[in-house]
Length: 471
Image 1 (cartoon, rainbow, N blue to C red):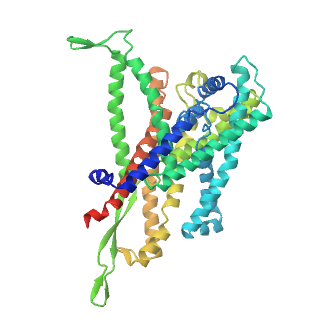
Image 2 (image 1 turned 90 degrees about the horizontal axis):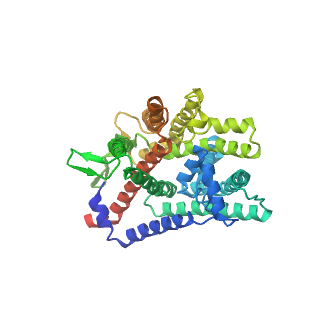
Image 3 (image 1 turned 30 degrees about the vertical axis):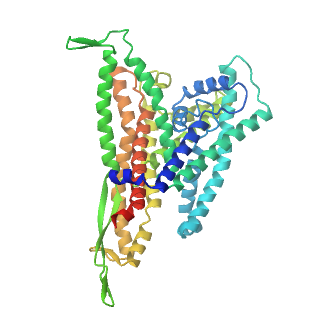
């Protein structure tokens, strides 16, 4: 990273304008996260939603990526889930339908059409998810609150419209951020959503750290610090582990294979062109954090369906099975879901999660890294890889290289996503209760990856706006 260049670029008005627009959009997003759905007693619905979130890991994850929008019963509680689901569907259809694949290869105009269809598909998905959330919440109100609540058609229409509109506005804000060229808008919004939840975690840790009811920390018998000694040493251990995890995540995210590209020397008149070397970097995890987000969103849908079915009929066996299978083991649900200790069901969700992360890593890399297009562009520019024939042979070489990198990259990404589950398993064996880092581990992975991607985008933009200074 060229940090000096980044700081130097802040003198450029266009750079400051883009950063200001992004910051303004993020402020608007955080403002929307605190606007409640205009229906009934907002406080009662907020308390009921918090009660629902505590029952499942699915609710915790949705609340995490919505920046607390679910717990606040805000108009953006549906979040980016409809757009993410629509993106998965459109990308699958692009690979499955030849006409769509041709359209995606038809330059910028073709990609714009596919993006527009993705936005259109997001609207009915947002409406369906809004109806599902409202239905689950209305059904739970009877068991949570002593005051009977029977929603009218006006209540349904107002709630679904507000929640669907909030999701669509969120999608629009994400695209506005992307247009500024300093990071992916969808990833940036999810990044801010996770970071905004750290304040709650820090408050909880702080209250536990300064709870001296069980004693204080003695430093070599010289004086006592007003902190809980057990919590203090646990925090020291976790801080060291967190630094190591950050270092490992950064190294893995930055790892890449460098391929040298040679350009043939051409003579035109009295001048010679070409005869130079360049590089083609291929990242170990080219898909970034997208596979983790896709896998979690994909696994969330069956859990949502299960919640919907059990809200209709608490004895529905299909709904109970979906909730049990597609709910991640955590400290909140371990005692209720596994009263007799760990059984085979405990490993189903982690195994599915790992498999989906690996699958989506291959899938998304194949979309963003088109080896045939790269080989054709190199051939047109007179570039070639030493020892590899231009054209189809180059495409096969790149395919083979990407597949090998994906093998290690996808497994690495999958194992990183599994670290919280492994930690939970170790704590269950040692203490009989999981530590509960499943969501925070995923959040940490998203935060590190998105931060590096956005920093890289800012670096590229900074080099662009300060290019004239190096002439």
